Length: 302
Image (cartoon, rainbow, N blue to C red):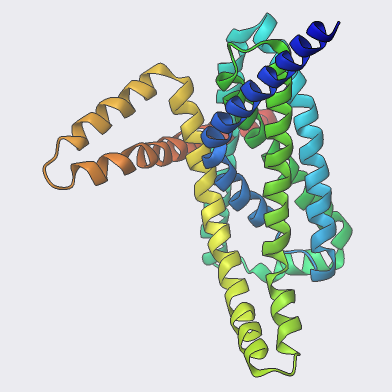
């Protein structure tokens, strides 16, 4: 009996060791998506009233947990019964992200041409509850695509592992990623409040830091808005590149060619995949935007 107990403990220790190793590998592979996820979601939840920011972040975080509670079991079922579906579903999600990115770029150009932001500000003041709900809905929708990529990347890492190990690793990565992303998002959106708090303190060094934070917060939000849009193209283009063999081969050949350039080859080859993903994401998003626009016109006429 004692021998059986020792064997059981040995099996548990071995399983935990395997889970730890696979979790570490999966965390490294999904780290890039984590950065994009952070930029996108921080940008998505900005623009609401200061006293409602944390409530909005919490609502989106709950939506993200629900997304992963749907995606993790779904990915496990698909990997067992219809593994061929994973790539097509990822591509659809990537195209959706690219489409949203193009919409944001075109909206920014329209705003510069004279469509005042005062109108949108007035709408948000007149109907804050509706505005918040739309913000949350948009952020949760975007999170679903990014969560799907995290889940699929993790699934690829543990593809040959036993089912229980897959469940543990995928659940652990999903939990850590969600807490990490929305913990940072909560900190980012409250930087200005921290600056205001320090500004009111008596000590000079606290007031100086407060002033710096107050000046830094709006610049950071503008930067995150740009980074968030670029991230849509990078993530969407990256999904398409990895899922479509022709695009993946093009990236490999481009990296090999650029890497052969004297002096700057190494530096250029490291940035080439990112630039290809960015360009591919924008082109794909623009094509989807044109197709959706044409379809909407046809439906209106019909």
